[in-house]
Length: 211
Ligand code: SF4
Image (cartoon, rainbow, N blue to C red; front, side):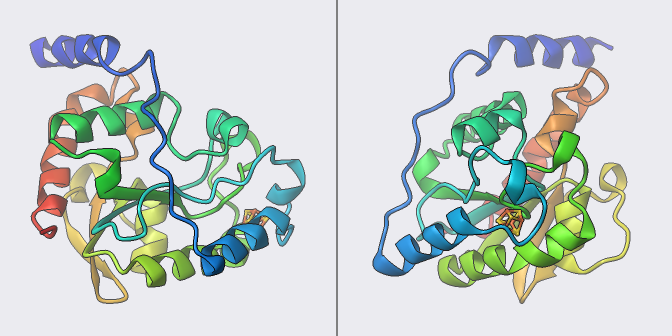
């Protein structure tokens, strides 16, 4: 219980007021075309209602890539990944581990906000996944961290993952180590905050793959 209150307090007192500065993704002609393609995409219904597609953020030379499910409300409004409360927790934890926004890339399985924050529908995943696959092929990270069960299952190809039991396990995506961990939106819930130390350990495991 003591630990629970400690992490509740930690959540309140850290990183909830301001989003960190945007780490811009450098644009090459190829990358500009890629962004334009996503901006014009309407391959699935999520494209019709989005405010902004959320392509990803960070340097294309990153060794570490985080992959979440899809944009939420604040991400849809800003066009940036992981800027809501859960994202600020992720960024704060990384900052405390000495990781600046220039050392990682963040993206999602789908680029447009799923309706009512639902798990992305199969048709949207099928339509959108090639974009992420192209990003990962370009970035060639040393390690990928999947945030939550859905991206873990999609990237690993595994049929079922129980994150509370299997977090920290290293699976793989196209030969790249894939560390399974919690989605930070779970960690900011009252019953999730006690898992923050485990989340930190999972991230440490991922960082062991980085130079
Ligand atoms: S979610 Fe992906 S596939 Fe669907 S419209 Fe947006 S960019 Fe296109």
